[in-house]
Image 1 (tube, helix red, strand yellow):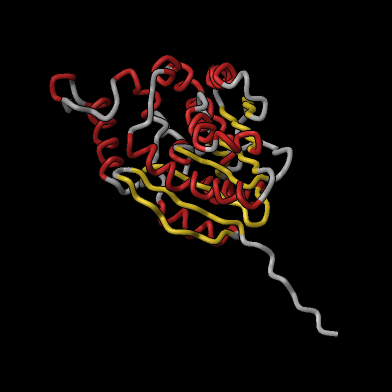
Image 2: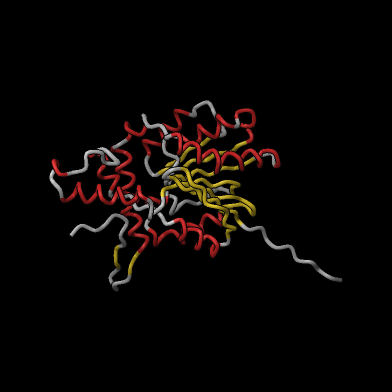
Length: 265
C-alpha cells in the first residue's frame, strides 16, 4: 500500500518519526517542482492572489519602511522570485532598505530567481529546507505563501514555534494559502480520487490541475486556518484577522513584544 503524502515513518520501537516523514515529503515536493520548472516559470498569480498579497503584506511593509531604516524579509518557499518581484516593484523607491532572503527546496527555482534578480544585491536566494534552516539573524517579516499546503499538519506547531524564534519582537508572519475546508480543497480531493480510480472518460472535464501535475497534487494538504490561529497563540503570537479573497486566506501573526516590568524603588 502506498503511504499518503506527508505521512510519518515509524522507528524501530514503533513510535512515529516526524522528521524522517518530512524528509520524504520534502523530497517529493522538490522533485515535483523540479519536473514542473517550465510550467512555473510561465506562471502568473491570479488577480485574487495578487490582491490578497498586496493587502496582507505590502501595507505592513510600507508602514515598517516609514518607521525603521532596514526591513529584513525571509520568504520561505520563494520559488522563482514571483513575490520578491512584487515586493521590489511596490516599494521601488525604498527597495534598497529591504534585505530580502528567499529559500526554496528546488535548486532549479533558486537559480531562476538569482538570474531574475542578478542586479539587485539586497535580494538573495538560497537552496534550503525550512525544517533545517538556521537563519543568520532575526527578521521583521516572514512570508509563507503556499508553503504549509505541503507540510503535514503534525509539523505545523513545530514550524510556528521556529518562526516565532526567527522574528524580532513585533515581527510578523504572513501565511497565504487555501483552507483545508474550502471548496477548492474539496475539489482537489475529488480530482485525486478521479485520477487514481476512474478511467479517463469518466473523469471531471475541468480538473483543477493538468494531469501532468499529478505528482505535485499528491503533496498537497491544505492547512486549517482555525487550527493555525489556535496553535499560533500558543507559540507566542498575537493573531490578527484572517483575510479572504475568493479561494485564498491570509493569516497575519505578530510576535508578541516582551512585557515591560515596572520596578518600584
